[in-house]
Amino acid sequence: MPTTLPDNMTLAAITEREDPRDALIMAPRHSYKTLEEMPSGSVIGTGSVRRVAQLRRLYPMLTFMDIRGNLNTRLAKLDAEDSPFDALILAVAGMTRLGLESRITQRIDSVLHAVGQGALGIEIRSDDQRTARIAATLNHRATRLACLAERELMRVLEGGCSVPIGAVAQWDDSKRRLEMQAIVVSPDGEHAVEASSDITVDLEEDEDTQARALGNTVADTMRERGAERILHAIERTPPAAVDSVSR
Image 1 (cartoon, one colour):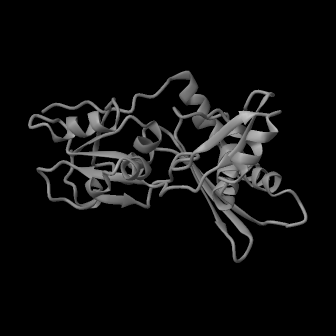
Image 2 (cartoon, one colour; image 1 turned 60 degrees about the vertical axis):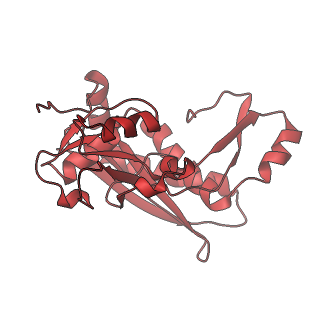
């Protein structure tokens, strides 16, 4: 879903978020349990520039190879006897929703997930009040506030699904506090810009506006720290989320 919707459309609801983390899926022939255990040169399959950028920064000894297809197709490529892949990185949410949670080897906490990952948004016509009332019953407050903050960050940074922006926003209901951290990493993993902030939501003011303001604040901090240089470099030379692999 684009961060800026057409004037006649609105985001009516965001349902409760599934686990938004990324998952390590190990090839059946291996007994490794974490990325840290994998030997140098192990080939990790992913089609995400965001994942590759952060993982290269954290695990420079690993090799990354592009993989395409739906989830079942990717798993079949991993499980094949002649597979070039030692493991894949996929979304926990997708694995869980398709009943494949048992294939998850590790839930990765060290990588910031994509904007809105694990959440489902319901977009409707702005003038459709009947549908808006129905959709509102599906809205999950904590998820909505977190995703609005994340989406605003991406909108301000002018990012999309093909750029290495990671963002995690979390709502603490007991403190009425919305916290957010974000990162932009160059595709080679060499350069990174990080920022974080939080707000206490004022119940007398519009919550959605306050959530977007948090995303804007974090984005502005990242721009001041040089995030746009990384993103503009990517625009000039689109990255390939792949290393040269010879086996």
